[in-house]
Image (cartoon, rainbow, N blue to C red; front, top):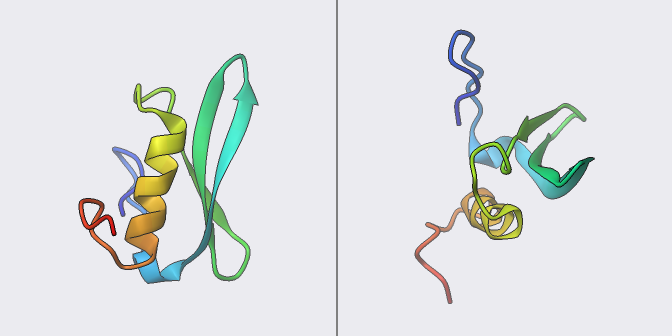
Length: 72
């Protein structure tokens, strides 16, 4: 996972302990990646024109070590 254009923040999916959906107001949503240790990173799902809920479940699959297409 990489964050931003100028400054890159690299993390492993295994470093993520929880994934949540955050409502920022005015119909904007972000998917929040909670890291082990308390830090977090927000991915602006609405700004990317993604379905926030679907995107959250895709990220949860990645955190669990599944490929998003490997639905059971």
